[in-house]
Amino acid sequence: MPPACRHEPGEARVTRRRLLNALAVVLATLGCAPARPRRPPAERVEALRRTLPLGAPLDTTLGLLVAGDPGGTRVVLVHGTPGSAEGWADYLLDPPPGLELVALDRPGFGRSGPDDAVTSLALQAAAVAALLPQDGRRAVLLGHSLGGPIVARVAAEHPQRVAALVLLAPALDPALERIHPLQPLGAWAPVRWLLPRAIRNANAELMALQPELVALQPLLGRITAPVILLHGTADALVPVENVPFAQSHLRAARCLVTRLLDGGNHFLPWSAPPVVRAAIEQAAAFAPC
Picture 1 (cartoon, rainbow, N blue to C red):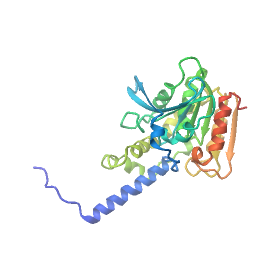
Picture 2: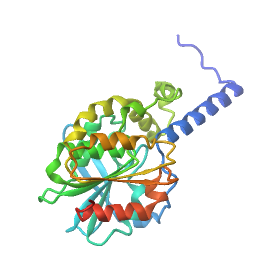
Picture 3: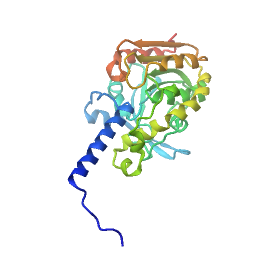
Picture 4: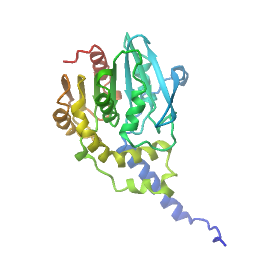
């Protein structure tokens, strides 16, 4: 017979709750959770909602937000971890003239499937590549944080379809990746399923990131599109030391423009929107050099 159920002592419940709360905070921080961008009225955001079915190998559905000029240059906005398309809402609700903005919920986040994490940068890149125009137009790709290596992989695999890259505080250097002591606990099944989906999947992505970046490294030399790289000097989540790594490995890019934001933090889409908007418009003009 199975053992009789026992009520967890009050002190043990409190200890467990404190541990889970601490773990969630650590994972949210390590996962570059956004610094609470302003949330526009939900009905305005919902009006921009779209979905896109994906075939193999993901066989799922992407949640999208789409705004702007459908005949203009497409700019694909890719969030970090955790995150969602809604983090770009301010940009979508006020798109630059002549541009079409598309923000996706990356696989494993927001309204995109699957329920579990998709830790492969190649599979994440495949989801982003599905948003490239099919009519021959080239697109601008913008990636923030972990979104940076994802769009870099797309540009390496589809050089003729990418007009320019904008990299915001990208995590590119595998030597700079560290696993916090609490992260393995978050991957332990009894704890993992107590965490919110976004935190659970962010933890899985971050624990798998270092070898994924090692695999990406030799592909960076294939990127030929112009690149605009923005990084805050006070970034406490993705060290600014990623910049020299990017500069040394993006050697085939038509040009690489680096802008260090003095005192800037990790959350550039929301802490430095004028700088980010200017980079988008410059990249869309195909003349960042």
